[in-house]
Image (tube, rainbow, N blue to C red):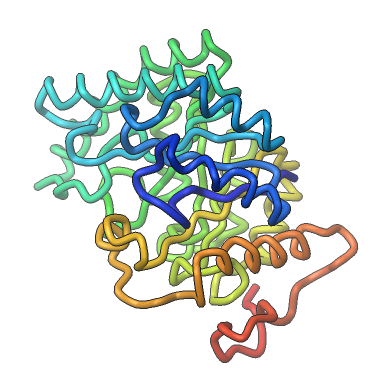
Length: 304
């Protein structure tokens, strides 16, 4: 099991001016960094590749899909902008050595809900049709799509693992699979372990985040269910901490964080990693106590 940290924890938008994060993340003990690629114009790929090599870090490319990058849009110009951006992500993943592209590539975060089930089906059909050639382009470069179901407040297209699997089957490409995020699963799935087991071999990526988007292990997410499910499906991908703080105002506004959820940004990464390593240590057994942190909420046990 490899562990990573998403750049959203510290900065937005990420640029090659932020390469000082890499040795810092490595020093915390992470195996890889997940780069949130909001603005391709700010990222010089050869410079980033060299810095990754110097730091000894692996990398995951993470897409950022706003309203102007929506493959489900009825506007052909919006779909084409989304496709052009996604092709850049594929090229970036290939250049940097990222095995997957994570995130909700099927549509925009915070999209306006469809007015009817029929309209929603049309959106999904447009999205799948647009993603199909992109999946082929990615497959030629050894890159997979890990599609992230989002909670109902962020999209009406794909909220659960079951819906994501149905969508992946509609696209019909073997390199299109799932990216499950514990924050969204906490809101939408009946069972964390059930969602993981349903995804099975199509589970390509995992985000670890608390129910309040704080450090893993400090809240209510059913972490033991996650660990059990990942073991049962023999998951071989990465587990990446993706959390946010109000210190990064642009992202805090987008994900509706209005208060401090941790002492500082480093604590989210450092404490979360310590929790995850213990969680996935085969000799550790179940975790029956919350994260040992002065910031932990007053809880006596972790559920699950």
